[in-house]
Length: 290
Image 1 (cartoon, rainbow, N blue to C red):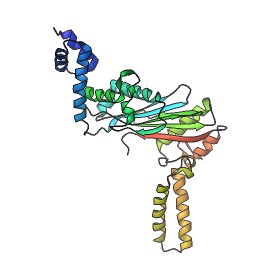
Image 2: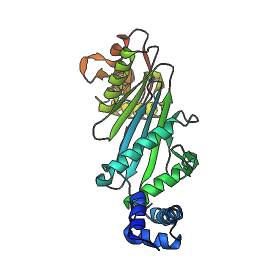
Image 3: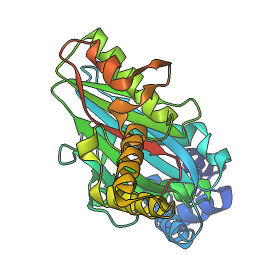
Image 4: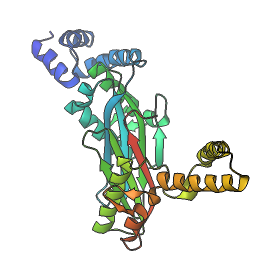
């Protein structure tokens, strides 16, 4: 016999409706674990039907190891800010970040989407599940399309700095090489905060030579066309283009940017204040970008 207590216990474990819990228990002959499987199966089907709904809210979460040699960012999306701010959703995002931290096969950024290999790996917090099943279970429980959009995991022999905006919408990891200890951590965190602020614009590379050449070519073509419209001689046009490219690099290259907290110095000058330190790379996530 299925009692109200049985139904309530299943609901507490799954978050499913009372009626659904009662039916699942009846199908499972009163077995709680089998009833969970029944609900999970139904939940997965419902989650799949929600997959075409936009998941543009959510949580961006960072996780950094105690020794500051490993850093993680994940973006877990929901449809509404109401779900994104729910304690269980936030807790799940943190668990996903810890899970990605344990995956030693990943270094860098991975766009996850719907069928990435990461989703088929065992959930580190419960080996009986996959990451995909955990995400789909969250969709079933919340009644919204929940997706793991992207993750980043970086390791270093130096120091990982991090910054997470209070609203969970922007986060940055910055890798500092050549230095460790409190000064390196402070530097890494300052660099990460600066990248998050995006002032004067969001940096696209640490240094000039690392800027994507397709981007440079596109900007140069625009500068050439603009300069030629001035009717100036070719030699002057070349100087105008060179000047605009120089300004462009200073705006988008991290080490050339004026520090958001003190624009009298560049990030490059800030880095030199910590002996031996350099910035190798950074990762910036902003909710829903791209």
